[in-house]
Length: 201
View 1 (tube, rainbow, N blue to C red):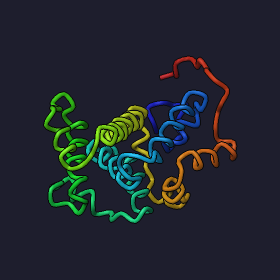
View 2: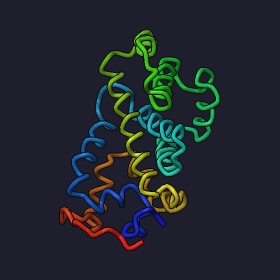
View 3: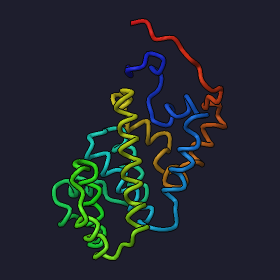
């Protein structure tokens, strides 16, 4: 079960958001715009950042989900272990490697970021807007990872179910299209604050 008795039937981040859609809808609209934004890293690169960040955080749910989205976009599943082993020798474009190093450091040791980390990205041809977008994806998935881990949903990750729902292919399009499908199925609670009493423990 999750850490929240009333959430015992919730097995995914999307269901958690749907359980309080009046709160989460604006954030998910932002994430949708971020991941399809026509500047900065490509869609594939943004999804790699999302999955890599989640792997660094050992968030099985988010890593598994976005690894599968990457695979739906044609990215090799083996890439992520190669990134963990050595970004310099991993099979990604050389210009993307300093961004991935930036993401790794920002995730694992954020207080140790320096000018040199950004300069390495600029030397590889990225501009300030590009780096802001990469940072935003990294920061967003750090948030997702902590939401999943904090609620205990990570314990309920089911990769086969995620694939059976066609979620990777749907999310490789537009995130909000995937969410609107669930809203149309009546999964979203838009009733607002519930003010539930503390659970009996």
